[in-house]
Length: 559
Image (cartoon, rainbow, N blue to C red; front, top):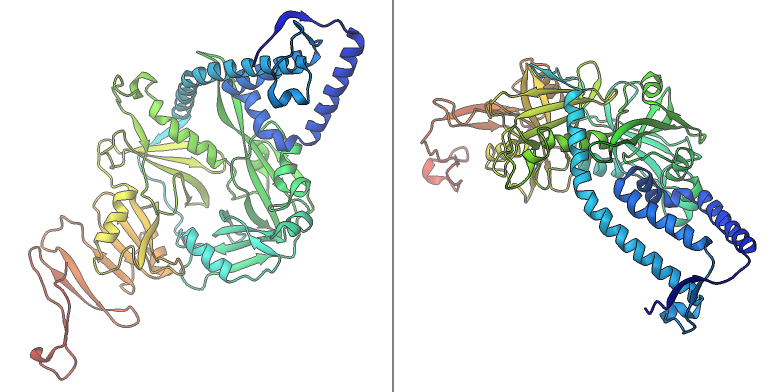
């Protein structure tokens, strides 16, 4: 584009020009205010992000300045504005060109600045997290009455298969506490289809028990329409109203759907940001309280203290999972920025969030119910390094208060979730892994001050739960349980009934390599045969009345 601008402005009536431009600017600002939820994702970073402030703030200031300035004077030649020149004046084309130049420069500066600002923000967050975290000598006790038995995928399949709503659907699932104290997968019953999303209301909430393998309860509170809810378009939706009533905050977490005294509610944790000016300006996330939505559409914005003191929210998750994820992810910077840099960094005492393999079905932080019905976000950390998979530290963030504790293994090698899932598969070579069954959702549990990884074996179609398998993070021992009572007894540290239990010894157990477990058609154990290392038994099925020579079916050697 040819910028034929001689540095002067056209002569206009300044008062009239400014009055017209300011009036239009006010009208545009008023329209944006009415539609402010739509631009929340652009406005918030300008206020609470160094890069957003540099790029968005500078661009907006220059745009307003050019808008209020008189028309630019050209040298009399026609300005080549392309197709844009068909609709705007030469002066407008020049102003847009200047604005584009400023925007491009601001983007480059903002990108360059974001690199050190991002590292400083991570370092600040890591220092704050470690300063606020209390070291502990042992693992906290688990709530044995609330085991996480039902994986999310299984709950979704079974719950959706048990409901029938012609004009509504179940929204995404999340973890909530039911009124009887148990944990449940919770769902919003949302309107389905464009017409219903525009005119209908969220019908209520549904809770699906996650603590039992059999006789699970699915309770629908579907007679409580929400005036403001999930899956509802524009000004009737929860997202629109949350941002309209408290704009300068973030709603990263999904809603927690639950009931209190038979009334359905939804709670949204809020994440704010704080500016830090040293060593360079940057921001870090903080807990900004939460928003509670009632069926009548009332939105109550609560500070962290108010949320903790709320009787309605007692026992629910209040602290943002997003904040915990950011805090745990920043801990690689706890020994400084230089320490974690590639090539030049020493990586001393550097940790990172332990990886879960693809298909695990969950991610860290894990949501676990500790003794006393205290929900906790648990994160397993491993030493830095591509080949390091043993656990180094485990962090516990209270889901009600945000308070953090951590256990350090002090050099002891503990099995991580990825290896634990592998042990589950290797302990049962007869199962068609991947084709018929998969291991999913490992979560940490703590029994008699030992860490165990609690995984679930489910069919590939996620229609049921075959068994729950616990792997000891210290010894590698695997315990397979097929009843809810057995799982609860195990978590309570009690002796487990042999019914439905299959225990594989640790790989280094003396005298026994593995067991051959014989069960009847009901899954009850008939006999357990120890197999010594080096033995290669052959299992044959001989019909009654026939000799060994007459057997027709035999299996491959056991492995």
